[in-house]
Amino acid sequence: MMVYDSYFQSDSFDTLVCLHGFLGSKDEFEWLVRAFGSRMNIVCVGLPYHDENSIEYHPTLTAIAEQLKQNLDDLSLDSVKMYGYSLGGRVAMMFMSLYSERCSGLVIESAHIGCSTEDERVESESLLQKNLSRFSSMTYDDFLLKWYQQDLFSKTRDLLSEESIERKQSLHFKDLLHLYECCHVSKQPYFGELFARLRCPVLYIAGEYDEKYVQKAHFLNETYGVDTKIIKYADHNVHVSAVEELVLGLKTFF
Image (cartoon, rainbow, N blue to C red):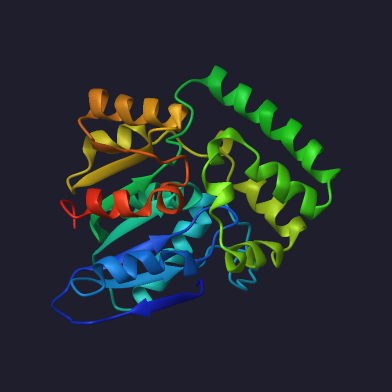
């Protein structure tokens, strides 16, 4: 089971489970608690190697989804809505593929749906090995600097709070690289077909400055009829780079 913070208001409310991204924290969903905590119960979960989560299992997406099920069982939650950002979104999709009856709604922010062909998977695996080799030769401080210099975070890198930066600096580099490898896109299923069979509401969110994930949003909408929102003024990390616009976009869903 993973550590979590819970904000329960009423047994009559729906419960929203929030899953952060790589280098993130369960604490980064305070904006969701402020915006929707008066109408929903909210549970913010810390992923492996984050938020002092020490683990004794191989942290694949499947294993993490199974741990998440234990969290829900511990809280006696039979059905929840989910919000997942990036890695957290991929965990949410894996959970949906395994336990679709436990989820009554899904919001995905900037998460990869997987490789649809073997050629894509081989290319992705090659990129993983190159990145692991490159990252392992860096100090953790250099890694953090390089990570947020990616075009994906063109706005986010200038908006991270000191508290957020300190949280990231407190993580253990070796553990993070292990998680990065175990949960890499090349190792996950292709989740495209998942959206064709889901019976619950789904919303896919991307930031307008993140061209790669805007394309994924359009693909999901055109191919599987998934509802999408492209958030203005946002990069890959929508909830940091354009949180006010994101909240407005979510109000019609929640």
